[in-house]
Length: 139
Figure 1: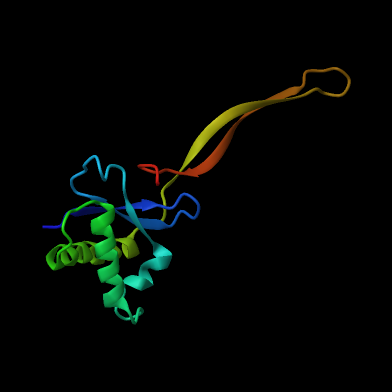
Figure 2 (figure 1 turned 30 degrees about the horizontal axis):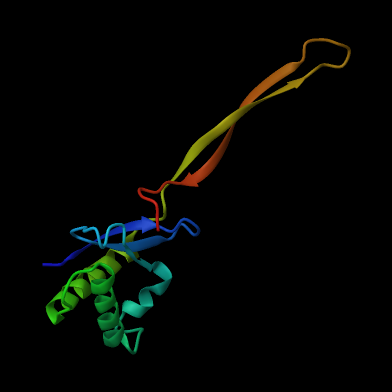
């Protein structure tokens, strides 16, 4: 049984999907700690593209055990973490772009008087911005 969970979120700067790992059980010693794998770094998690794939996966799995304070680092624990990462990489590759929504920042009223003193025109319009919506702040 894996001791970590995974989910996809989005990079605040680029909008690219990011795989985020977290401890399945949060303790005082690991509260709020996360491990993120960016889309640009997934080549490191591929046997086809990284000649030192096995060493890299052992290093990452061991580091995650320590960062998340998962206790004694065992081969079985590292293998289950590596499996969660590999399954997450597939999800990361299939992830859609960051969802955007339009946020209204305010309104503006423009008044233009007619030449000669007649009634002018008044136009009211909203000031909006396209923003990426995130489900949780990245640390």
